[in-house]
Length: 247
Ligand code: NAD
Figure 1 (cartoon, rainbow, N blue to C red):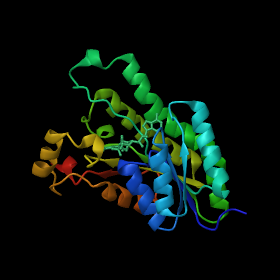
Figure 2 (figure 1 turned 60 degrees about the vertical axis):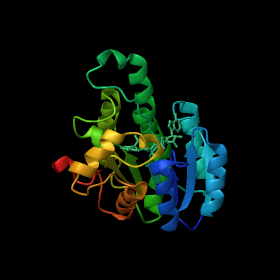
Figure 3 (figure 1 turned 90 degrees about the vertical axis):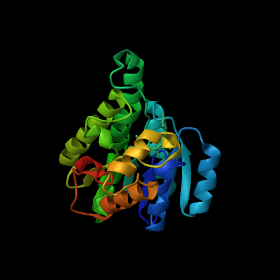
């Protein structure tokens, strides 16, 4: 018998934005599967703190680990209703420095930021379709970036992977409907350990963004929760940048 609560898997959820999403979905009544590449102890501790939660380690650069993650996530409670593809990597390279954007950088970012989310969705497809048969469409939320929408971002390879993820979102929204909704949140700057020393970007958001600050991880979690609860939304790329794109 599947668990009575809906189940959400949030990748990369022991820190930063992913942890805030996991916390929010748990508060909204989901059983949560936490995941990260290496912080196993943090993951187990966080799962115990959340209550109806568990933790699975997997390296999303490896296809066998991607398949195992989905298998183990479904096995815990016998169902999967929501998949949040939050795990991602970035490389900071000035856009004009073409030599530093090597083939290795392109391939590494592409595997983790584009191929991994697609493969996780592919492996989760039967379980997400089963959610629709229980009465509510399965739901995928991809965490992309404003860098995938505008000519901005930590590096050209990073921005290109996020643009690709946005397009994968739209393509899958069409091909998996109506059983599975597929949307993305595209954050601007978010206060996380990764961006703690990005002082120029922080100043930019304080000076130019209509909301006068970078996002908190909880702001992005709120946007994810909105997409999860909106039964009619699919194929949307929800820009969450405090309005910076307007200036
Ligand atoms: P973070 O570094 O705190 O979290 C990234 C997570 O991804 C970690 O849990 C890590 O374990 C996981 N991860 C990375 N490589 C992995 C791999 N090979 N296998 C498995 N897991 C892997 O970063 P964050 O700032 O919280 O970023 C979360 C998402 O938000 C990313 O997709 C990032 O691109 C996106 N984003 C962040 C910002 C920002 O300003 N922080 C802005 C726009 C988009």
